[in-house]
Length: 333
Ligand code: TRP
Image 1 (cartoon, rainbow, N blue to C red):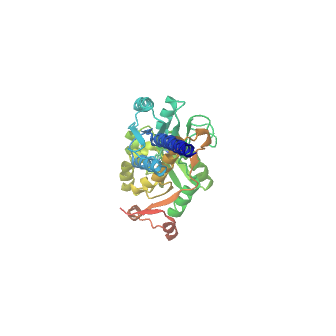
Image 2: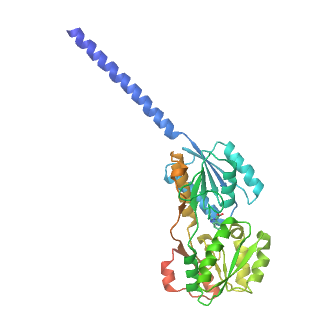
């Protein structure tokens, strides 16, 4: 009787110890799985302040969702410096580095990544027109391995801003690069609304940064205001545009906060850092296991107003109080 009791106690102890060992091992395995380092390959098209902000946002977005560099995340970053052949080799390199997810910042970078792989997920970082750029068939239901964030903004807001700030303006000069799909889309949208509201829109498409100086020098004689879409070529040479336009006191209405900070008069646009954050968060969802087909392309509903007060002063333009109140940020440097 006594012996039987002892045997039962021993069996119970064995069962508990074995159970604990198995359970402990399992949770260790789980920890290892979630601690496993993921690799994100980022290809940025070129260096300009807007894209640099987007990349900072991407890192923050990944972190928001639990992916921290050096802990459970490795980011391999490449900058194509607006060179098509570099973009291609870098895309292949990022694929060879066994990236779990690829992020393309700006249209040409995203196009290069999407051309290089049809199975690794590609997240678009601020691509204006993903359908026009042939990156996705349907923004709501991406069919392939590509989805992400678009930075298209409603043109009506931009025209409204021009009417409020420059009530005498009639001729808008659109300055953009002839080679960028993103700019083509934005200019088309702008023209639709501008013409409806009685403006004339003149096109000034440059083949490269080399022609910006001479193009701006001559366009200021024929237009009341310079409009700049989310164009990488112009963004790369924004300082030149501002310097030349200031000589004739021609106002510039760009489409993003960073270009207002650099000397544009005002814009209705999306905060570039926020664009990046959203992109990083979307990449994290894919790392968590979500399928591309279940992640529609994300677009921002409205833009925010940004104003450069110093620039307004220099141009002799007074900013209506109501606009100042609405502004998300007023730059004064
Ligand atoms: N939307 C641009 C593209 O599709 C990239 C971009 C994002 C950009 N933010 C910008 C370009 C600001 C100029 C300025 O390529």
